[in-house]
Structures are given as C-alpha cells and as structure tokens.
Length: 76
Ligand SMILES: [Zn+2]
Image (cartoon, rainbow, N blue to C red; front, side, top):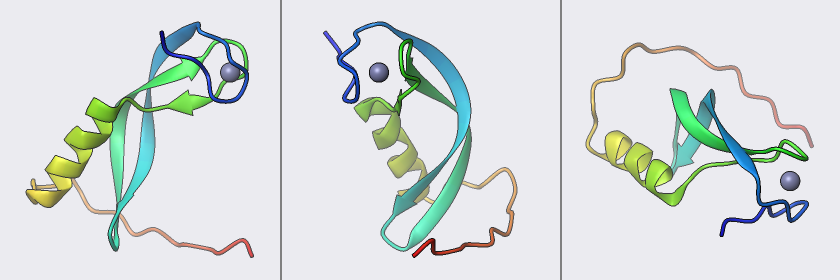
C-alpha cells in the first residue's frame, strides 16, 4: 500500500493540479495532472505512470496547448 513519505499516512485523495515538470533543460507546465494528496498532511505525489506520461509527451514534442513565459527566480 502507498504510504506518505512525510507522515506515513496511507489515505490519499486525488486532485487535479497544474504542475511544473523539469526534464533535462526543459521546464514544462502541465495542467490538470492527477496527483495523490495525503489526507493528513497534504503532501502531493505524482504516480510513476503519470510522470512517465508527461515525460513522453515532452520528448515526443507533442504540440503544447499554448505557450507561456515564466519568470524564474533562484531563492538562494
Ligand atoms: Zn502525509
């Protein structure tokens, strides 16, 4: 059974969220990604299958729905 890395809880619910993924030098924003959210602490995890699917989409140069510019800041 899946366990939360942070609190050890085993109860999750699914939410769809917009998430940035980074592959090599490319950062892509994927909208409505199914994520598992820990019921107790809110830790968000993505299934291996989900990440793999995103990676494939990026590698196969699927046509993005649109392109946005992202300002990036380094915290430290
Ligand atoms: Zn948790």
